[in-house]
Amino acid sequence: MSPETFYIKFRGVRGGYPMPGTTTLKYGGNTTCFEVRASQHLIIVDGGTGIISLGQEMLQAHRTRGEPLQAVLLFTHLHHDHTQGMPFFVPLRHPEATLYIYGAAPSETHTLQDELYRAVIPPVFPLGTEELFSRQYYEHIRDGDCLVLTDPALPPVLFGLAEREALQRIPPDAVTIRVHHGYHHPRAGVLIFRISYLGRSLVIATDTEGYVGGDQKLIAFAREADLLVHDAEYDEHEYAATSLVRQGWGHSTWRMAVEVAQQAQVKRLALHHHNPNHDDAYLEDMERRARELFPATFMAQEGQVVALL
Image 1 (cartoon, rainbow, N blue to C red):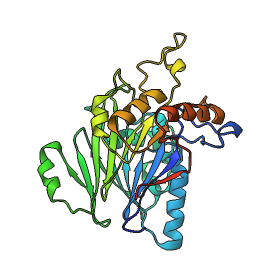
Image 2: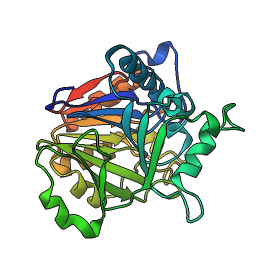
Image 3: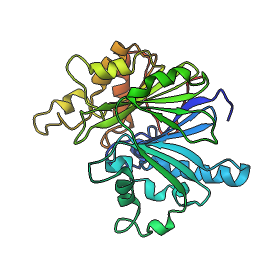
Image 4: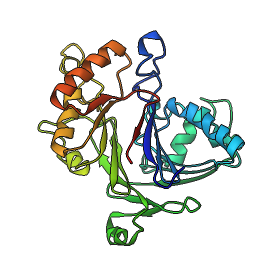
């Protein structure tokens, strides 16, 4: 990768469960996974089924071009549609892979590693921990933290909120990942990430539910980002339906996402976490209506690459 590389590739854009078939060919059916390349670093956000093809491509690049099997994995939260691809993520079981894995502490008695292992070993998967040959380094992160990536040969450095003064001394070409904890998703909320490199910023805010007047903390966190990826699972009539109350489920309408983008003055908005019941035609119509209010909006598509440099 070039030192000036900075892009996001949408590996999985669907929420809830995978939805393959002829009605989802344009936007895709795999569940949440983002591939971010910044300088020489690979950053993966969430491990839905979209991570499976990414892992296969990483292994192929390692075999044919000698690229390192190394990545930073960030988990917004551990709901099934954000982890269900992990048992089939081949670097996790490769002896030459190094994975730096970050997420919120699930509880006072369980660690991030404990909970991820529940998804990749028996009884839900046939292979046990003895088959996890990769080098895995787990660390809990929380609101206000910042990860700094410099030399790809070195592990990320984690700065807590009390250490913010140290960030003034990091190299200008470092990649930074700031952490915001939103509490409006059952039951422990989600982590939202702002990834920055060479003056450009990407904010990933999936599984978040809007507030009246806009989520002001998220708006401040996303201020003037070059790209905001925001949950938009529901159309307005679905969210407000009385037959099935979706308020409090931790997901937004496309209008909520637009409201954040407008107030935060971001450059572009990607609508994400598509409802499994929304086919390509439905999503096209949602995108059209969102663009009427915020023209720099697009509906995220599986395989789509958006350059930030």
